[in-house]
Image 1: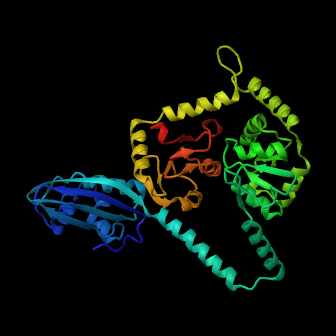
Image 2: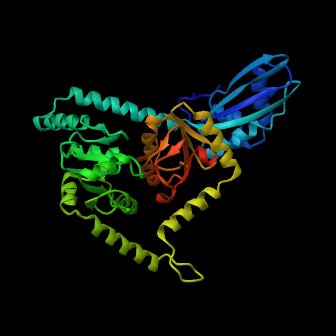
Image 3: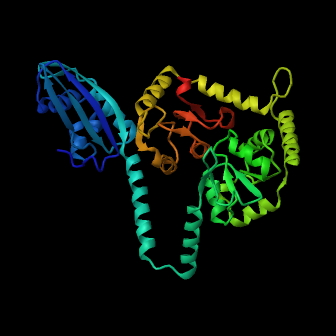
Length: 411
């Protein structure tokens, strides 16, 4: 028998089996070893791979009904991706088991390391929490921890749009508008309580109403997306001042010193619109021209065209797969993480999705989940080079990211 268990395997091959007759489990296992013998060469001989511990115990479950047998086959593997795929494909050549015709179909190859990483992350959180509770902090650490906890607890939902906000919106004459919930938490951490998040790229009615009776400072990330939000918000709301995080940084990650420096250096909304207009004109004239007519193409149009090209380049198989997965996920609050071949790398709850994506780092082609695409998740997806996000709805417009964004309305 094999020397490894599924716990030590890197991949698990899942296959289904249909048999035109009645057979027992040993018949299936015998057919797997017998009919693949000599097929793949000495290095990939199943018996030798089991003896060396690179293929684990092959699990076969067979259920007989009405004279026919159906079941499943599970093959744990510690080989690399290519070798595991070859072993999986070899199972499908089996056409007879005992005296009966049979058909084996590999459904998917599961990378068990995805779920292991999720377990490691959650367990590490628990251990860190225990460590913090058991280790006696010094006076400053204790004060900082209590102050931080109190400030984060102060986050509340404001207005009919239930926007994440600090506790001092109503009593303050000035209000700082940021992009997302994580930005509000960072400002609260540094004792800035008169802040509120847009919670997406579309401008909520709550923000429009606040702009009529408060002095509004718009505080955005130091990237191209920040410029787009400045243009959109200043066009529909009465914004007084604008400031940005340092180039390439997000409001949620900057330090207390950088926050105060940015707020001290705020400029009027009119001046901000003029500066963005100059940058747009320069980029249009210098970088984006039509090859034939030497005419500038608007930046927004170029971004939109890239998105259209990305979504229209989807194959029928990808569309069908995305649609089927999305339908199966309705009401589950779960997510499927896919590789380039549309194999499921892992299945995780939405609450763990961002942490899982960050831990993987690369190799994720698409994410299908029962939820809403927001700006925070798009930022994480951009950093890990994900190509497609498929969900029930989206708060992010297509032109604001190079990632392909698909919702139920696209199918």
